[in-house]
Length: 125
Image (cartoon, rainbow, N blue to C red):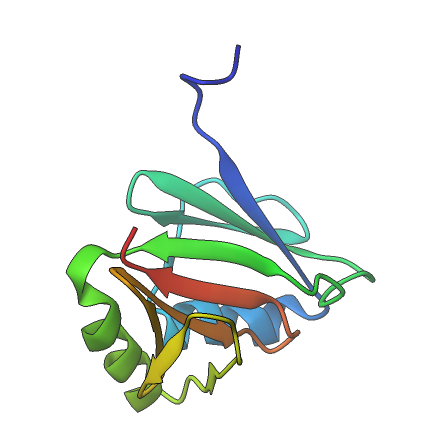
């Protein structure tokens, strides 16, 4: 039923102004034309990211959003680090760390958090 439909990522934040500084200033996202009270809608490629205010912000302990960036994981991780984004380093079985990028076989992933602790990542898909 939903296999041909687009999906939208949702990220809960405590303070929309702080979140906007991160998502726009550090990640380079631009708000879409459609905005509602308490939510900022970003377009990212062909997808959308809804960033909304919630008392439950930052409670997810798993990856909330992944950007599939092909062979640009290392390049984008460096660019984001240059914009002040701090990357997470995890110890995981069968995975090594090259700078800020976790590597397992052909998979390359870099994890980072937004100001509320939501886990975001870049992956080569």
